[in-house]
Length: 330
Ligand SMILES: NC(=O)c1ccc[n+]([C@@H]2O[C@H](COP(=O)([O-])OP(=O)(O)OC[C@H]3O[C@@H](n4cnc5c(N)ncnc54)[C@H](O)[C@@H]3O)[C@@H](O)[C@H]2O)c1
Image (tube, rainbow, N blue to C red; front, side):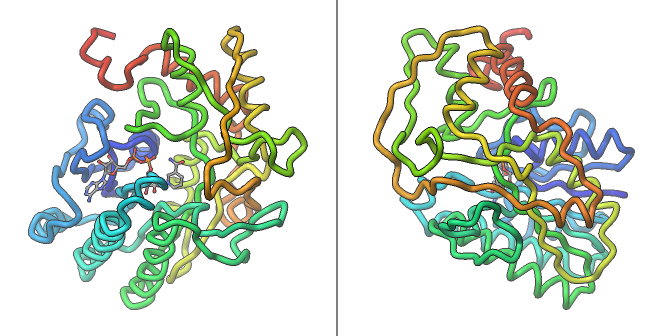
């Protein structure tokens, strides 16, 4: 299939573009490099450089015929979305609506969207399923939920097969492709970076949560497992309309467990500080992912903490300043 990957210069989009290409799909990338990296773009892929907010640019892109769109492009920092919700609505909702408008009538038959566990609110349930109530607690999650609604309508009116994949915590790396956000707010890259910087410290935000060791529990999913779910969704989903699937491991790991595994994998002593809780951090977010297994035949095979942290550590050691180190002759 000829596939357009929006956000293909970003973390998850770049890995998925690589996996799609390895599967024999013809991949083209759309990105404006607002948070992405030129070094992460699939070598040899046609690059459409511009923004989803530019409708003339988008019309030009869709003069080419695509069988499918995988839509990763978005802003995704929760704190930033709280500080500047309008910017998030504009980029994520208006940008996505413009993309759907540009797709209309072009023959795109499949559309896969990067949604998020952030669409769920606070919950006491051990596993969040697709049937759990949606009640985002920040503007970022609200933009994702709004886009799901837009996509449902578009899929129904355009007779498209659409899938919204709600990822839990993406992590890990694939060879030369790794996680490099600015600022970085995700636990594993923050921890690994702190180990590579002399004099850097690392803080646990809250150790008084109602969990066995007092630290927050999350569901960590290897980026290659996520990429493979996209390929399966692209190739396998056959129902017109929108399907929503969680992507997680159904296993929660606490911050302390991540730190302990990191110490083993890196062979380094880690002595974290304990800071107060951050507002809006639920104590536990773990996916019920049975539906993705059933509908896609998906089995996340790399999402144990040792593999995730080992792959991420290899990437961070090779790129201590992220993709900026590309120029240093690696
Ligand atoms: N990283 C996670 O743990 C996680 C979890 C749940 C959902 N998601 C979602 O997955 C997607 C990818 O996340 P990521 O971590 O790879 O993010 P990322 O910031 O690394 O990648 C996003 C890419 O989109 C591009 N982009 C943003 N706005 C654009 C616009 N208006 N026009 C063109 N390009 C634009 C950026 O330049 C970047 O290359 C996002 O939609 C994010 O919300 C991520």
